Length: 65
Image (cartoon, rainbow, N blue to C red):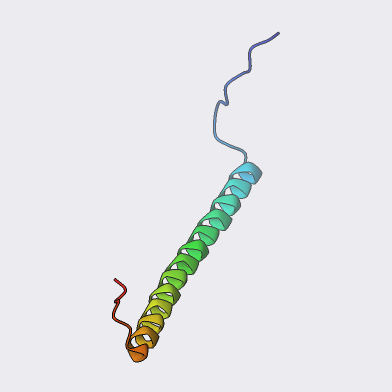
């Protein structure tokens, strides 16, 4: 079996363009995922605060942390 020849010289323009587009899509997806994570945490905090308000209104002796 022959050895694989290493890539020598500059990448062809089409390959560079495809790599750049793939990296752009990846970065956009990562950014979107970060925004979704932040929104999830924000909603979780709001939900916990509302639940605590409800518990407080019930006059329950226990308090959530």
